[in-house]
Image (tube, rainbow, N blue to C red; front, side):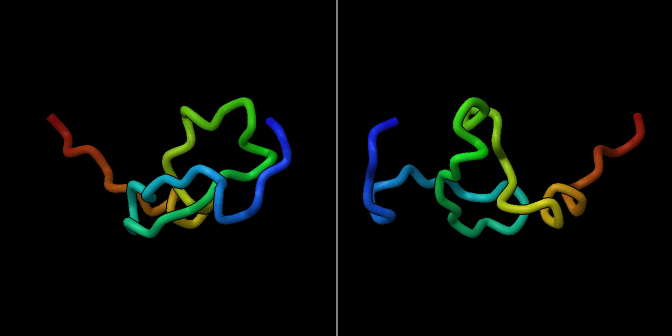
Length: 51
């Protein structure tokens, strides 16, 4: 990835809180799999109902 300005970085919406979050260097190889903005949101994700 070439050098970019912060405003030009890709963004996603968090699956838990719905807030936008931007690309981070540590997510470079797994950006397509990132769904949550933080560990807190990842831990609070909705639980699946028992079937």
